[in-house]
Image 1 (cartoon, rainbow, N blue to C red):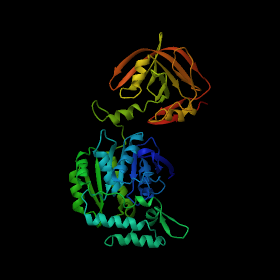
Image 2 (tube, rainbow, N blue to C red; image 1 turned 180 degrees about the vertical axis):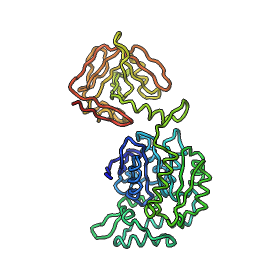
Image 3 (cartoon, rainbow, N blue to C red; image 1 turned 90 degrees about the vertical axis):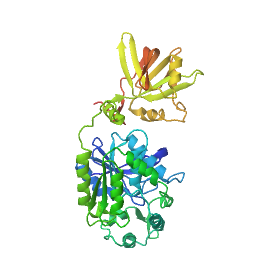
Image 4 (spheres, one colour; image 1 turned 135 degrees about the vertical axis):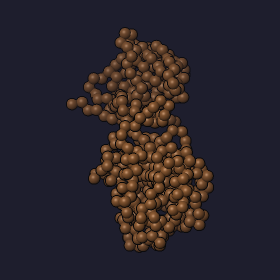
Amino acid sequence: MSVETIALQGFGGLKLAADVYGLAERPTVVLLPAVGQARAFWRGAAVALAEAGRYAVCIDLRGHGDSEHARDGRYDFDVYVEDLRAVLAALPNRAVVVAAGLSALVAIAVAGEGPGQLVSGLVLMDATIWFDETEVARQREIHIRRADGFDGPADALDEFAALHPGEPQPMAGERLLAAFATGPDGRLQWRGDVKALGATSIRNEEARLADAAARVAAPVALIRGALNDTVSDDAMRRLRDAIPGAELTEIEGAGHYAATDREDAFNSVLLDFLERRAPRQPLTYIGGSEPRVLRDALGCFGTGVTIVTTVSASGEPVGLTANSFTSVSLDPPLILFSLGGDSSSVAHFKDTGRFAVNVLHIGQQPLAARFTQRGVSRFEGVEWAILADGGSPILAGSLASFDCRTFAAHEGGDHLIFIGQVEHAWFEPHRDPLLYFRGKYQRLHFA
């Protein structure tokens, strides 16, 4: 099974390393390890998911493995929640999230809080939202000791086994050791920001997580190693009862590491749940239901990419990236684009009475990304000009540009639809277009 390593964006643009398995157009499953572990922990499950027709995305948490360290030193619970939200919002379809430990609690918060549903299902391993203070303190001490490193692989595995003396010896040692690298002194050092170990406090999150659990609308599977000595059967049953419609399965003979030590059994439970509760059939949108499904369906219509421009009352250029563009009429020559009513630029387009649409070619993808950013001077360093008397900014090198007088503006739900009468047009017939499909930029190379 081939694997590709990619970079995803977490909260604040922080880069998160991820291994992906399978084809991106298939239903997505995001897999998150527990604090202190690396994304390789989920390798066996990811391969099984890809072979079953899923797209598996295994992610290193911030400050873990190959992901970036937090520049502001933040490793609190809320920032992990925002990381997952950022990842899920950027995916081409709603994902199932598979998570363990703290990451399972993060998944509950994301699924149960905030506007819009970002997930199509949750699979949570060894999760509880009711915390024993003594156990929380012990786990923090464990993470802090882990930051000191180990003399070698055998020493590390002995330490992992000693943490849970009533459980079976961990079998998939290479998955656990993937979070470490051999240092210059020959010792195993943890691969990450040591500030991330033991930095997250969850003692005060019980009420919040209980409320979030009650609001989870997606299908949920809870999985517990039957020999787990810190998350009891009673705790998992209590969580099952707190989440509407949740299922609970125990894997016999396994402790903390059921996903690796009893891999076949774990994968069987995982795949069975997905086929029953999150099948690979087309999702359906019915008026008034989940808007994310409608957005995903609309994303199946491939479009070009444009930058629409105008000038402010003070004569400053204004522009933003848009793919909601189409031709309307040849007689008179009309085109349109739509702009969100809450956009900070909408007043400029309404007041000026003019706009231009610049269609981008494949080499202008960085420009498209630039004109979506907030808090930057979008036109700085960009070559542009007013080519017609009283016209709008035309971006140099665009595949095509249309300079328009506003013909009409109509309210359309949460957007404003601008129809423009084309007064001037320029185009370059020998370049390929930049495309946008299913939430990603695409490139079409003509033969």
